[in-house]
Length: 157
Image 1 (cartoon, rainbow, N blue to C red):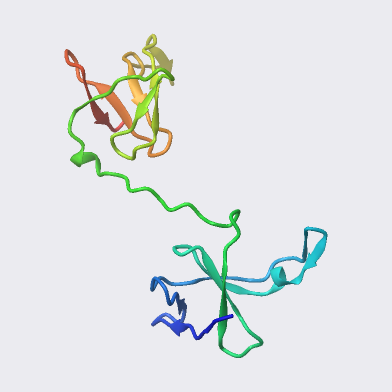
Image 2 (cartoon, rainbow, N blue to C red):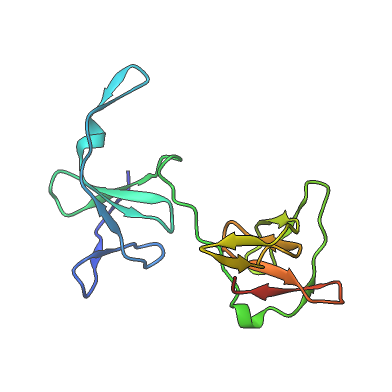
């Protein structure tokens, strides 16, 4: 058991000794049963580092903290980097066998939307779905085909 004295930042929040990020404070939760035994550790407050995937728990109000790995169900996924829309050149996009392709903006899988007839929305014609396009559910990007080419360009709607 290696105990650590946590440094305090300018905003009076603890700082992770490993990565230097601010620690998120979490109040103790309810008593839980794990593998048929009562887990009293769940009621203790802790300081969580989402970047490292660990949490710190104070030992007997001593000012020293013990480090533990976060359970897998509490680890938050790191956000992916999303490219600015102005940095995306026209790109050739091809549907794969599942009808999807990788998004040039975030890398997730985009859905292909086939062209349909003009629809009436609030009494006005809506031409947005009259041509084939790709939609990314992760970054909410839409890529529409440039007329007369095989290239797709990011579109704001």
